[in-house]
Length: 348
Ligand code: DAH
Image (tube, rainbow, N blue to C red; front, side, top):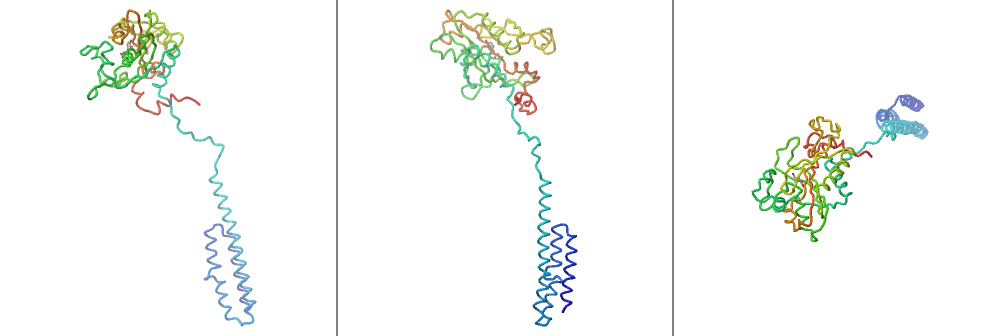
């Protein structure tokens, strides 16, 4: 039965040699099937123990077992080494480079409409004006009648209106706030307010018209308030908004709620008043409408026009924003185009 032990030794050496060539966990499994499974030659040798004389079985069995144990031990070691190697490779390939710059979340930007609205409010708040929130939904009384535009007045036609079912309309001008403020002021004394917000008109949308747009309304009432006060105030505004070198000029105009009425131009910041494409060669750009508050408007608000005078103005927010930022199309303010808005992101 000596040959049984020799055979076992040979099988063991053969298996050890093969094991050197095993380089992956799947092929290690194959190796195990070949050398350590029930069908392996070494197991067949075990079965042959029964043929050995009983007194030799003990030492033969121990010899075969030793070969088997040795191979199992080698299997364990190899398995551990291969697993470790696989893990190292995985960690290497999935390594995070902590020195790479992080990916930023998309930070939003404030719409230029809001930026300019805030800036206008800041400028007038700095001159002592109080902010009065108006109402997007108005009645004809405040939007038209108290502003000297009675039913059938032709000036109403200039503001194509969204009427709501039943009573009410979407305000066509922030001037409606003037009527509220005058009426609600119980002292019927001096006041200075601005009222920013949206207005709505049934305009066909194009590059300079939109069915919704923003205005900042201004109203100052006091004793002896003149056009000179209006001009000084608006010149200060124009310089704060468009630069120290800006001049303004007043052109005679018409609004039902002011007398006299003016349109106010600012000298073109791009060409310094020489004439360019932005100011259509004139050197001046219209920015707002204004005037002395009409005595009838004061009277309708419960004021005594013999004692109090006032001036009022209405600035178009998009118009100012378009001039300040060189925006060519009013529709950009409402299109939610992230590429347009990104240009107004504050750097952090
Ligand atoms: N409400 C006028 C408009 O929408 C703008 C305006 C002009 C407002 C003169 C005023 C003003 O307060 O005095 O066209």
